[in-house]
Length: 465
Image 1 (spheres, rainbow, N blue to C red):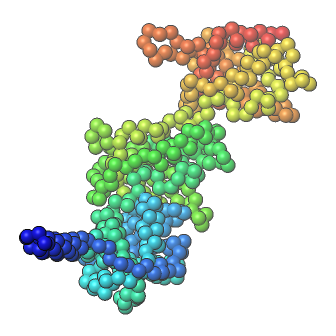
Image 2: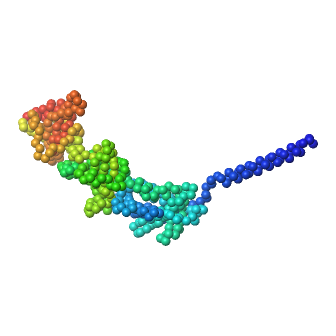
Image 3: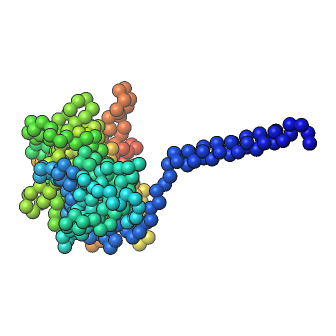
C-alpha cells in the first residue's frame, strides 16, 4: 500500500459527503423560498344556470355603502348607470358591461386553501332579472398574492360557492372605476337607428324624417333630402368623442342663451319613441366647447338619461349644420333620365316638346336632349341655396329657359328654370368657372358647364321653330 493513500481516501470521502450535505441544504432552501402555484381544483361555473339575456339590472354596493346601479335602457344594447344619491342616469359603454358579465360567467367554483378565509368587507353585486334577483355575489377587496375571491351568497349572506379570481375584478367595481364606464360618444345609439332629426338655432330649424331607405325634409321645405348628408350627421355624432364629463354639470349660464340644438329620435323595442337632445354650448377655450346631452321619453317628456354636461373638441362640431341647403341633394332631380319620356322647353318666343322615339332616342334633337337630361339628373351642383319665401328672381339681362320633364302618361316629374351663371374662384385673381343656374321652386343650384350661354341659346332657338 502506498503510504498516506488511506488517509487521502478518507479525506476524499469526507469532502464528498460535506458537498452532498451542502447541496442538499441549498436545494431545500431554494425549494422553501421559491413561490409555488397553489393547487386549485376547478368545479362548476360560479353562476351555473345564469343567462345574461335574462339580466335587466346590476346593483353594486361598496363596503362603505355607496351604490352604483346599472339597468338596461329602452333600446337594445343600451345600458344606463346611476351612482350614489344622484337621480341622473348616464349612458355607459355597453362593451364594458358585456365584458364585466363575461368575467362573471367565466368564474369557476374552486376548492383551495383560501375558501374559508372570512370576508370582513366585500363588494356586493346583485344581478336582477324580470322575476327578481337572479344571483348575489360578494367580491372580496382583500387580495393575497394577487389573487382574490368571489362568493355566490344566499339572502342571509351564506356563501354557497367560492371562486378564485385576479385582483382586476375587485378594482373594476370600485365607484371611481365604474364612473369611467360612461360612454364617450355624443350619440347614445348606433346611427342607423336614427329615425328623425331636428337641427335648430334660435327660431330657425331644419327637420328631417327617415322614409324607407331615404330621408325627407319636412321643414322649412318639404323636399327629398340627401341621404348621405342626413345620415352623415347621425354618423358624425356617433363618432364625436367626449373628452370628459363634468360631475358638477358645468356653468348653467352657458346653456341659458339659445344656441345650436340637435334632437335625434329613434324607436325603442316596444315601438315607443325616445329622443336625444344635444345642446351645443359656449367654448371653454380656443379648442374645447361644452355640450349638454339629455335622453327624453317623447310621449311623456320625462328624462330617461341625463342631463349630462361634457367637453368636446370644437372642431368636431363643424360636421353639424343648421343650413337647410346642406341637406338637399346636389343633383336637381333624383329620378334617372330613363324615366323621362318627354322634355318640354318654353321661352317667351314659344314652346317645343322633345319626345322619345320607338328606339328610346330623341331623333335629330338627340345631342341636345341628352345633354339637358344629364344636366338635370346626373351632374352635381357646386352651390346649393334655398331662397327666402316670396323672394323675386334676381334681375337678369336674359330670359330664363323653362324646362318641364314628363314621364309615363305625360305626368310632370319636375320643372326648372335655367339661366347662365358663374362660380367665383376661391383663389384671388383666378377666373370664375362658367355655370348654369337651375332654380326649382325655392331651391337654386349652380352647376359647372362648358359654354353655358351657347347651350341655353340652342334651347331658345328650338322654341322659335
